Image (tube, rainbow, N blue to C red; front, side):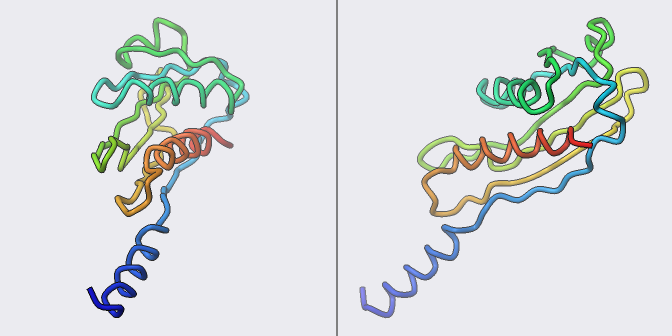
Length: 147
């Protein structure tokens, strides 16, 4: 491999290796001060760690209690004013990581969406993709509940 090729590969790796996660958000449109419980609908298609991470973020960042539930219909029975759903896509690159993530919050009584966010982690040359995925999830859940 020539020096010219090595320089090009190094520049390409630096460019793509430094691309960061990104997301868009529509913050909560109801006052968070009126919420004391948030039901979080489990998504079994994603790794178990994601459910725990979402619940911990809701509890720590928003000072409310997160209740893991199996479906939105349970939210009313528990007495949650709002419920959260999340989804995403996983990609394998040496390790499994969340390459795309979305979260939505609904008002339990009307099932109308009151907040949402979606984001992605680029599949680049960085080796800390799982860490970037975790950081994206925490940031998105915290921002979608901010108001």
